[in-house]
Amino acid sequence: MAQDETHIHFNKGYTPNGFAEKVFHVHLKKYGDNDELYFRDYLNGHPEIAKEYEKLKVSLWKRYEHDRDGYTIRKTAFVREYTQKAKMQFGRIY
Image (cartoon, rainbow, N blue to C red; front, side, top):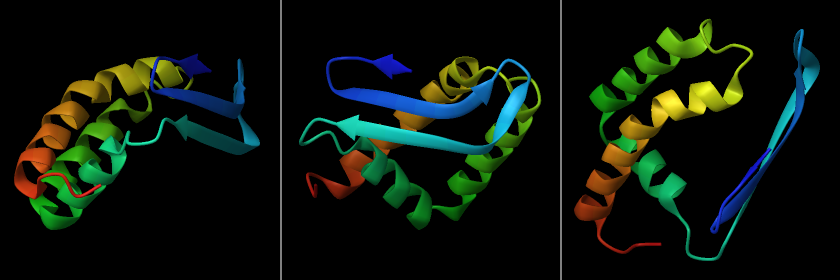
């Protein structure tokens, strides 16, 4: 579905008429690209931010239900902001 210099995303189950019975996401990352782990750990340690992320995702759900790229783009600024905060808070742990 998408590719850049650090990772490749494969998705199956998205159709023009909605989701198939099963939907799959596979993310292949280069060694050392651990942003998702930092973001996860930050949310786990900051439940108020996790709640904000939940609200953001719910607000985007219907509008982007059949537009995975649009949905991801609309979350990107939030994810990047808190990933950077996690890296500052935790230092280099991964």
